[in-house]
Each structure stands twice: as structure tokens, then as C-alpha cells.
Amino acid sequence: MARSFADNEAIPAGWRTRQPGYAIWIIIAIFRSFLEAFFYSIYYIPSSFRQNPRWTYRQACMTRLLERVFHIITEIGFTQSLTLEPEKLGDRWVTIDPAPAAAYSGDFSSEIIKPETVGGTWYPELPSKQSLLEEQGLVVLSFHSGSLLWLTGRPEDSEPTATLLNNSMGKNARSFWLQYRLAGGNNPTPYPGAMQDAVTAYIYLTKEMGISPSRIVLAGDSTGSTIAVALLRYLVSTEKLQDHELAHLPPPKACLLFSPSVEYCFEGDTKAISANRNIKTDYVEARMMAWGARAIAPPETVRLDDPYISPALHPFATPVPIFVQAGGAEVLCDSVRGFSNVMSAIPGNRVEYLEIPDVPHDIYVAGTILGWPKEQEEIHEAAARFVLR
Image 1 (cartoon, one colour):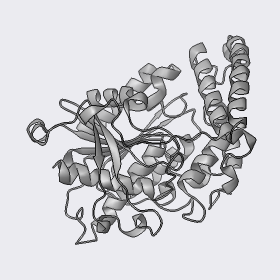
Image 2 (cartoon, one colour):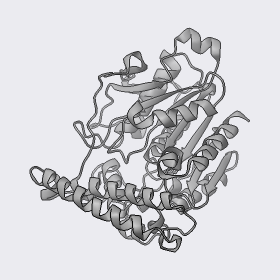
Image 3 (cartoon, helix red, strand yellow):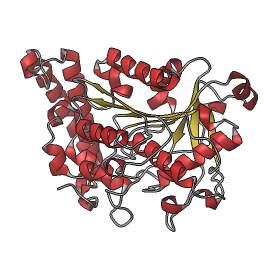
Image 4 (cartoon, helix red, strand yellow):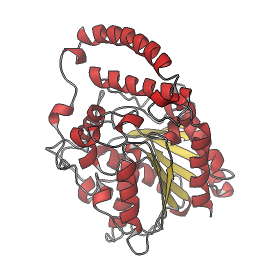
């Protein structure tokens, strides 16, 4: 039975998560990793010993390596802290102040979690309002992955994907990658913080930058997809609020979801994850996924089966076309396929589902790194065809 509430014990704890144990365990983990790398470099030579016999040697080794990296991160409880400083980005980095309080209504209104100033990165550069008006290219509002614990949307973790995405979306396409608040680090912000930030970014694009929603494409991978779908549902809800500043705008052009996290009552259940048919062919593990579920949905704040957390359990009507992609060898495959099916079943919805056989989680981002560059390119091209048709 899937969980209704996240497990507080999923948060890494113990001597390894604090100094000096933290540093000691990193040293031990590095030494252990060298031994494991040596072992698997030999073990995976016969294809029959690989996670999937159809994988190449590189694919098997790199997927195992990434799995061990996430294993260590989970052991020590590492989370990422954010800054609103531009650092080396110059004017590609922008900060956005929250909209008026009325913009965050319903489930996105909270007595505890309030909207805050956020930032984001433009790719390839910050456009002027005049150039946006003259070029009339698509603008992608993108939400990165990271279990609400890591990553920023800045070039060090997102530029290769942003470049692929922009290049596939036609002439003059640009993307804005939001650095939404995380549930760890120096400013722990659980639900609905990241969703509030998505509303802030959407209002920035439509109101401050003057971009018509009909030119905006929402995109998210893994946890970022949770935020993208939440924003999509929220925009539907604002249509009923005559005084909401987004109520009378046209809908976004499309929504692109890559290996989306759409069923956190599944992801928060370590037993269900461990028993999944694809657990041996993915680089995610049960403890990490349960930690991510706890990060986004503290049990005292929101249920794991909440509509904004687990949209696979709460399909909704939307005029926005939705592209959904999953890897046939990822743990989330069945969950993602189920989400696509229930959303497709609603009259008026347009949903396209693409399943890439034999690949693990989030090849949209990690394809080149893990050894599936052609599949990564295929995903971007399919998403672009869906948007541009």
C-alpha cells in the first residue's frame, strides 16, 4: 500500500551527517568507490552480467557510478545551499521579487511558507523586451530536477540541456531556468515554496517581460516536472478567479515532462520502490527517493497523495498540450505511463507519451553522460516536434 504521508525517518541522520563524521565518511566512501569501480569494471565485461544485457559496457559502468554517487550523497545527507548572487553570470542572471499576495491563492497560500525573492538564468542570454517582441520565438520556462534538494538551473548543472532544448525549439528560442527554493541547504523551504516560485517566474515572464503565454512552453524533468504540472493545474484554477491577474491570459503553448515525478505516495514508499521491476536498471535508490518525498512534502504540511504532489492520482482537464517521456528501464516508468493514461482519458486533453526502451531515469538531461546521446537527442527532437506541429 502506497504511503499517504512522508516518513520523517527518511531524512538522513546519524554521525555521518555531521562533522567530523561527515568528513571521515567521505574519505571512506572515496576509498570504497575506487574498490567498487575496479570490481564493476571487470564484472561488467560480459554483457550478461550488466544491469541490462542490451546495455553497452559504458552504459552499465556509468549508470552504476551515478547510483553510487547518489548513494554516498544520501549516506551523508548532503543538500545544496543557494545564493541570489549572479556570480559569473552577469546579466544572464535575474532576481525576481514576489508578486502581490493575491497571486498566490488556494493551495499556494500558506501561513508558514511565504513567497520570497528568487532568481533564474537566461539561456543563451537575457533578451531585451524589444527583441522578444521582434523575434517572436518560443520561451521555455524550465524547472530543473534534483529531488528538491540539489541543483540550481545555473550553467554548471543545466547549460548543456538548455542548449539542446533551445536548439530544438526553432529560431530565436530562449529558455529561463528558475532557481526555485530547495527543501534543504541554507533556506529549507518545503511545499508550497517551489510552487510559489513557479508562479513568481510565470508572472515575471508574462507581465514584466511582456511574453504572451501562447509563446511560453513549460518544461520540467523529474522533480521539476512536479512543479511544472502543479503550475499547470494552478493556472486552470485561476480561470475561476475573476480578480486574479493570470485569470484572463491565454494558456501556455505546451508543457513538456521528462521522467516526471507525478506520484509521490509511490516514491515515498521504500518497500514499493525496492520491489519495483526496474530497480536494478536505474540509478535511483529507495532511500534517496523517500528522502526526496519527505523533502517536498513534510507530513505536518501536506499529504503525499495531494493533487499538487501526486497528479497521477488526480487527473485534470487542461487546454495545454502535454508531452510526457519516460525511460523503459527507470523506476518511475509505470507511474509515468499511468499518469499519461489518466490525463489522456479526460475529454479535451491532448497528451503524447514517449517511452524510450531500456534507458534509466532522466536521459533528457543525463543521456550524454551515461552513454545514451542518441536517445537524448531523440527525446529533445520528439518534444520539439510536439510543440512546433
